[in-house]
Length: 260
Image (tube, rainbow, N blue to C red):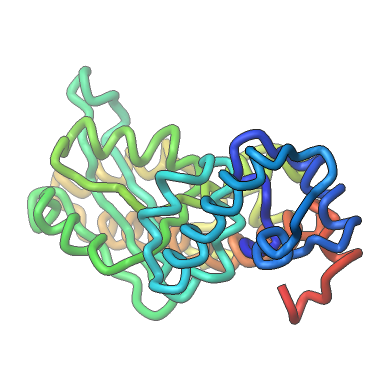
């Protein structure tokens, strides 16, 4: 999808992008090879050509941080298909308070499509360990993470680096017309949770942590399972929302999915 995308260029929105597709300008190469394009001045086209050449070069070498800086966050979903093999799903649990009111992160769940693991407060949850976990990945997937998880983590651990594109499924779902939170979205998509944590929410996670720090291994195990379900399910949701978002652009009318 990303090579069919022109709204990454400053001054081109989705409407003009569709007009380009209708003219048969379907890829970055198509755009660059055109001598003239309706509605785009020669001066702007020269700037756009340069930007697309840069993007193509960085995409070829897999430089995802380049796109985190140059593409609007709301368009980061368009990078999913090319970077999903290097994607990391992340979800945090907290003690229920904001950072300036005694809040802290109790658990960070991480899933890359192969392994799920977690960092636990009081054991191995440190900025150094979290940076190590994040390093080597090219793409971040969260649910409401751009508004909650990432800002919260950075308040607690200012030295954390988040410099890769970020697919926030919450805002993707809203764009597609879904209502409610993660659990409702899972239900509407037919994604089933482990029966032991079905029906639990963030408030339950806070209570489980309170029991866990008082010595309840059962509560800690349940909290870990709850976070695992939150984190692992993000990848399946990302795949489905990406395809829906892709359909919503109208690109299917012009490009066979196997070619884009």
